[in-house]
Image (cartoon, rainbow, N blue to C red; front, side, top):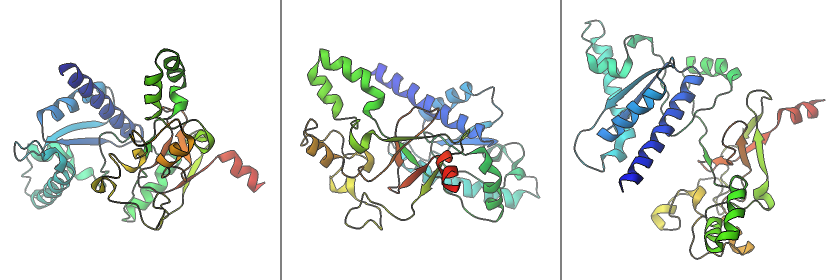
Length: 297
C-alpha cells in the first residue's frame, strides 16, 4: 500500500542518515551513495537534507545500466567497477586537466586529496574508538587493508518486556506470536554484556577463525542455509518464526536458536540496547576495562 511504501521509504532514509552521521563522527570527510533507481536517489537526497549542517561532503551517483528491477542486487559490484573506472580515468587524465562533472560526483572538487576508501552499506553504522584512529591510519599508510567487524542486532525480550506484559493480558495469541520473534530473557540469553567504547575503553576480542554456529566443522562458517531451505533469512534469524517449533516449550525454543547459543551477546552503551552478534559467525569475547585493570593488579 501507499502507506507501507511511505513508511519503508522513511525508515530507509533514517537508516541512511544514521550511517552517514556515524561516518562524519569518526572524521570521514566525504561519502558517496551509489544507486540505480529514482527512489534510491530520492532517499539519498532526503538523508542529505538531514545532515546539511555536518562537515562531511555528500554526493549521489547513479550507475544504472538498464531498467531491470533486479539490477539493484548488483549495486555493490556496479559501484566497485565504476569507481575503479573513475580512478583509472582520473589518473590518465590528471595531467591533461580533462576532468568533468562525473569525476566531481565521485571524487569531489579536490580529487587528488584521497588516499583511502571505506566501502560499506547504507544501513551499517560505523563505530571506531577515537583513540584507535591514529593506529588505524598508520596501518593504512603501510598499505594494509582493514575490515570492520559487522555486528547484527538481535530482537530480544529485554527491550520488549513492557509490550509483551501488556499484550499478554489483552491477547494471549498475539503474545505467543511475539515469542516467535524475540530471544527470551532466560538462561544464557539473559546475559547481555554492555560495553562502553568511550569512557571505559571496553573491548571485544575476536576469537579468530572459530565459527561455533557450524557445529560439525567450526573451522569454517556455515553456508548454504538459504539455498537449502533450512533458514528463511540470515543465520542469526534462523531460529525465529519457525512454524514447526513450540516457542512455549523450553527444549523446542533452544532447538530453534541452537546456532546462537554459543555466542556471547553484546550491546553498546548509549545505543539501542539491542544485543549484537557477529554477522560473519565469529565469536567476540567482551572485556570490561575495569576487569582487565583488576587482573593486572
